[in-house]
Image 1 (cartoon, rainbow, N blue to C red):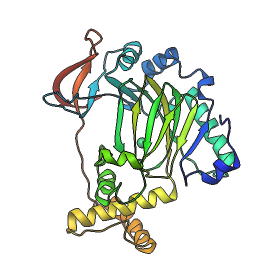
Image 2: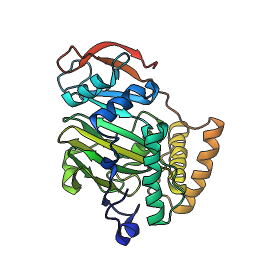
Image 3: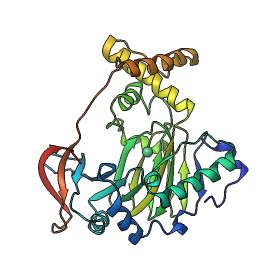
Length: 309
Ligand SMILES: [Fe+2]
């Protein structure tokens, strides 16, 4: 699955931005036909069909929106993604379906062999996205690899410093499962590392490094993530900080605390998560549009309702 991996890739893996070539396209699992078959059999509760409210929308300007795709076949969902307004996240596709799982095992088998790390527990989703899709500025809470398969997308990676990822931004993402976005300032682009991803190219970066993505065309990518001891500890420490902030009115900082303090907070974070004392946000996911193949851009507003599929 890995084409050009060298010792330099191994040395930089998880520590720096690393770009490498892969062979996912050769599997035949990412063609239009294969994706249509995948969409037709994928469980609906593991599928997200999303859109972005345009800046002039009266209710959803520049907001990520959840769509209803029930009763719409894979062919129409793919056509909706190609037409421009819609993108599709086939969550855990690489784990759920045996033919994709075999490929995921090969991908991580190759990484294990090259890096010596045997402790991967990867989850993999497939992102099918429109030419105008943008993934807003955010960070991922686990180690992430983007395996780009079809189309062109531009990826911006920003410095991993308190200026770009604040304590409260991190804590909010740990506490609120639906919230990954961070405050963003356009002038930060001058400090970004920019990559024009081509089919067959994969990119990975140090855990939590903030980033955003602009599509240049219709795109198909695989995103894989895996947790590590370090990611589990950091997220647990952030949960402690969020709890101290919201329930006890304190202003903790992961960035300013030393390793010992953060380690203790991570132990505490696991305890309070189990006991239910931890700060928690249970935000509801509202469906605000449905896919309609008879509409020009496939997107038709509906009366908002809580997602139940
Ligand atoms: Fe990401």
